[in-house]
Length: 125
Image 1 (cartoon, rainbow, N blue to C red):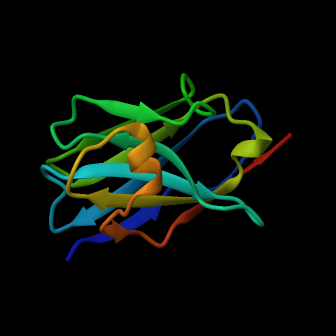
Image 2 (cartoon, helix red, strand yellow):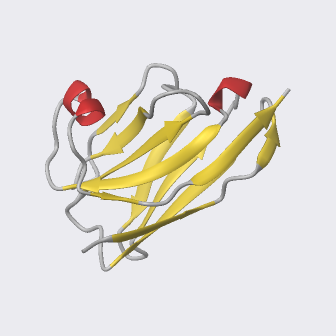
């Protein structure tokens, strides 16, 4: 059973940056890791995913070029570096883990095995 704990969310000015962290136990080694977000009144949406070998990524079009997903296997931690933030990036951000890699469309819509409880990022103009 994986446990995921997100942190790093806070209020930030538009154009600023945040780095979200997701601490996993017991391990994230070999797992696909990802980030999703959900804004008030909206459905949860896929943000980014990183393959188990750490070599391949997928990003939502809305964040491509601004967000970067990465991980540190030694620390069992996944990161989401968010730059050039916009008010529309305001949401609860959730870390997730799954066993298998897939296309971006499948990662966005199919099941992930474990989820964190989320961290709130608020971007103000």
